[in-house]
Image (tube, rainbow, N blue to C red):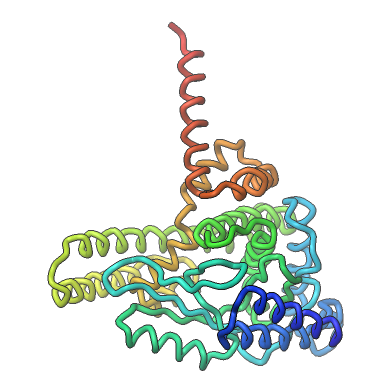
Length: 364
C-alpha cells in the first residue's frame, strides 16, 4: 500500500512538473491526497468490524451494491473506485470554495493542469479554504465555503469512500456513488457545467432505478428519496426565480451602492420565502435556514443544474433508456468541442424531425 501510494504521489508531482505547475497549492493537495490513500482500508474489513454500527453496516452495503448496479446496469466505467474506505474523525473530507462578482452571477474560475478551469477549488485543510474565501471576499467577491463528503479524481485514480458519506440516507449515498462514478466515465476539461449537470442527472435517475430494484417501488427508502427529489425541484425553482430577479437588477446598471442595497433586499425576501416553504425533508429545511443565496451560491447551483432541462429533453428524445443515454453522452456528446451546445442542436433536430413525422402521419 505504501509503495503504491508513493508511486501515486511521484506520478502526481511529475505530472504537475511537466504541466508547469509551480504553486504550492497543487503539491499541497497532492500530499493531502496521498494521506487519504495511506488511510484506506477495505470496505469489507470495516463492514465486518464488530465496532461498526448496524446503521453504518447498512450504508456500506448500499454503496457496495450501488457501485455494482452502476457498473452492471448503467455501463459506467469499471474501476477500483469505491472498494476501499477512508475513516475520518471529521464531518467532511475536503472544503470547497466558490466565488462570483458582487454584481454578476458568474463563477470565478481556478485553472489547473489536466482538469482545466473549474468554478470551485478544494482544500483538505479547512484553514486553507477559509484563507482563500477571505482573500476573495476582501477583493469584493461573493463567496461560499462548504464541506464535502465525496469527490471524484475524474478516473485518473481509484476513488475511495470517505466515512462522512455514511451519515447520509440510503438514497443520498446511492446518488453520490453513481454521481461520482459518472465523473470517472464522462469528463470534459474546462466544461464544469456540463460535467456536473450530467453527473447530477445520472445520479438522480440512476439511484432511483437502483433503489426501486433493491427495496421495492413503494418502499420507505424510495418514498424518502422521491420526497427529497421534490424538495430539490422546489429549491431549484426558488433559486432560479431569485437568479432571474438579480440578473435583471444587475442588467439595469444602477449605481453600485443602489444595486447592492436592492440585492440585499431581494436576497432577504427570497430567504424568508424559502424558510416558510413547505419542504418535506429535514435536509432542505436546514438548507433553507443556512444558505447564503448570494451570487456564488447561485452560480454554483447553475453549475450543477444548468443543463438539467436540456438533459431531460435529450433523455426523452433518446427514448428514456438511461444506459443507452449514458453511452450516447459518452460517445457522441462529450467529444464535441462544446458539448452542451452540440446537445442542444441535437435536441432541436430531433424535435423538428418528430414534428415532421407527426405532420406526415396526420389525416388529411
